[in-house]
Image 1 (cartoon, helix red, strand yellow):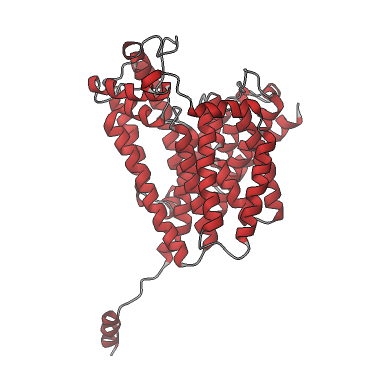
Image 2: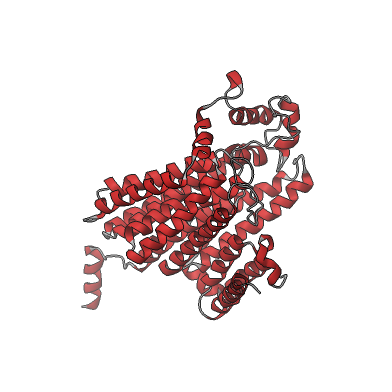
Length: 446
């Protein structure tokens, strides 16, 4: 048995024990580990028992929740955050869309997968109940991304100017895998800025692996998402009035090291592909992706409630010429926003946008609350998680990621941060009695 396979088994069964006897958060952390290591698709899986590791981790999460449901529901009620109500509504819309889905069997399959994903997120929200649990979960995500980076570095480009062949359990292609790495940028910047020397070293090590993987995957959407999320957080690091003494200098140093590292790992093939962001390859109607997006509106005229999962693909030969489809029989829409629109209609897209808006409003309340306590470290933590969602959404604007796991992980992380930094402390604050109440109580005592 390989050392890595043995390490995986030790961690796997260790997390099971920790989840049952120490903290339920270990169950979700185990789920994260299995997601990134994806033993069914790795060479070392031949050395371990052929168990359904992801299924076991999922069942463990639900089992731990049922064991401690009464206590967990008191401290983590779903109704405190509207985002979870909207998630449930989206699941309902997917099941409703079965009535008019153009590919019913495919729609049923992915609707059930989406349902399982939403259940995982709902359960994980109850299990992650402390700042420590949140940070460990974030580090599990970062180390998982670093593992993908190590795999990418060891394989190198194997398909022209891109790397192919690294998969995640939700069936992501190279664009999907590279998108999964994008949120790590802002989170790593936060820990490198706020952490001690050991944490900073770990951040730079993981960041180097992740950056190299992004270059090898050569995804233009991931490049734009990384620039948007990391760039936004860098601006706050350098110019926010809430930074502490000496942090601007450290931020400048991080930027310089990051730029130097980025220039080191990039090559001509990377910059040639990124330069194509400015090109237009379909005449007056703009780029092919914009053409696919605009075609969605034509389809919606005929199918106003949406076409269900894979419906756009089936209809593409009727709305796009063979030249516009680039010789491919069926085309996909290549955007999270138009994917939502085509699969579950205008009502589904609107609920998705309202869900993101509700999460942002709760995040704003949480930031104002921690600023009122002058807890600037938590303020920047929330901000980093906001930027991570922004980066993923920018990346997903160019690829289909509406049902991708990492999107809902980023939402989960921010929701948990809102809970432990805002909702939990808020619930412990004793309301101040006003003067009239005080006088009434004094009169009753006399």
